[in-house]
Length: 396
Ligand SMILES: [Zn+2]
Image (cartoon, rainbow, N blue to C red; front, side, top):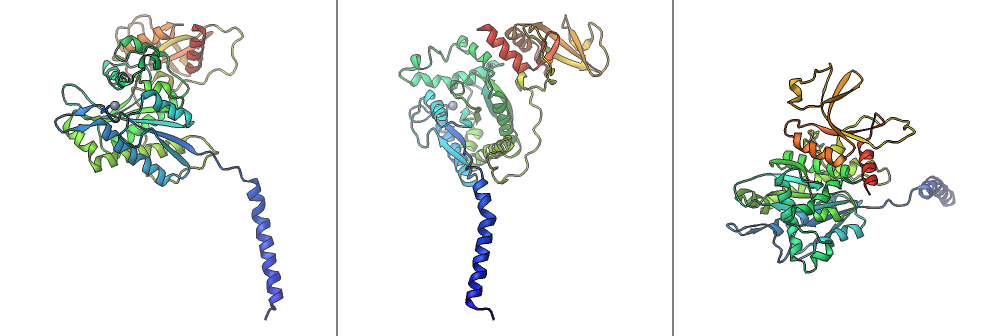
């Protein structure tokens, strides 16, 4: 039998050993990682009801808030490494610029604005997610106009938004140039949201779109505006206000959020435990902005003299050369081509004026759904984002 003294000594050794084992790890451990901050913005509130279904007496502001609170609760419950900030948690009026300010002040990593769509006539169904950009369709512009109109309820809107008129199409031209650094991340999150709406909530997927939303213009982090569905369509309104519907939509956004957050290559922040099932591969998104299209890597060595980048629209590729007037050009004239590997790539509308090329692209998008803009400098293909940046800088 061991004496008490011996046992004490043994215990002391064990303690010293254990301290020695863990102390260096404690000292060397990185400081606690900054929490990922997500701002959840329930659109409208109080006297600003948003869109209304008068037959059923359902208001957009209520659907938005219900979904926003459920989403926030799911994140708070399951993601200890995330801080959730709300622009409103109750039925109160919050000015549009104030919502963006809350996100900017919180140094948010992601801004999610939740809304519900409406049309004056007809029956439309489906969910869509917007990122900031130039609306390519009248329909998208109409959504932005309707959502921006809420600033008219603010007393000082002309000063606050520097003369922006939510109803004038001219006011929206500036959005053409708003392909900022957050664009690709915003689109990446938006695609995940839509994929979840489609696969998890079994809603009609109206896709990822761009339009000039003031609230997204004012934020300085990846930001999206979700239109959950159409309040003007009775069954959608009823679904969205129901417990089942709002829970499912919130869960879809939550799943997209976790997938987005864990997918960001940020080694310093711990990943949220995988509480979601694997997400199905997102399908290619036709309404993807051209800056998102995979461009071939830019040449490693830049030429000595830097000409202005030339933008072109790539319309199709072929593994053999095509003749002028080939049916696949669908009547377009002045087609150029370049070769990469064994592939001939055909382009249209070369110009150093990005804006003009973008406009031409819009003209031909109905014929060439997958066309996208590429850029060359000194005859060498370059990164299109870099080219757009140069174009914008030179314009100033
Ligand atoms: Zn709204």
